Length: 211
Image (cartoon, rainbow, N blue to C red; front, side, top):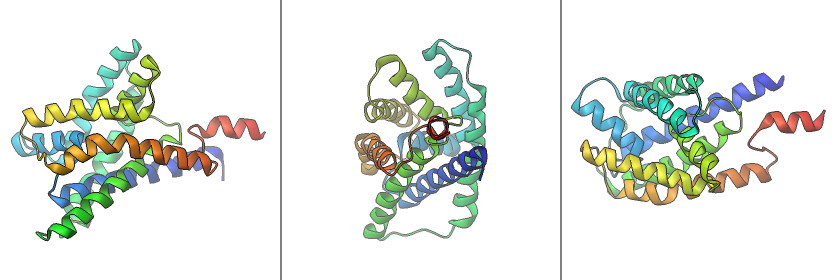
């Protein structure tokens, strides 16, 4: 398999896993990740699907990230949010549309499973070194400017999104707070696990070293 196809496979797989984690947490009804809470709130208050707001909010972040990095906005960032928006709507409105439960134990199972799936999806797709999801690019932009670890900068990004979701009266619950505290740590953990498994954050560098 060529390097490009390998990276594409890892990229799309990671984005799908990420989207699955998002939908599992939405279905749990105990709280969702802050960015997703904002997207759900905008969908409820303004209209359009959650996937559509993934694309719109992500588009706004693309230009904010450009300002943080003091560079021209990375327009390639529209690629992952288009893919994720499609996956989220497919999973939320069709594939997993029947997943609804009022059993608290099952709800928390969906949430915790979704949180782990989301974190692993983020760590996986970043391996491909293709355009990042704008909110993850926001994390990386802050990391680039400050030198802080991605566990810290991810938490900062989630906290900002939490405030915005609160203002729009999004589906914030106990689970949302858990995401703010734990998602950055989990992404960092999966990042280290993938590194130990021989999958560095940039496959291009590894491939060139092996030539």
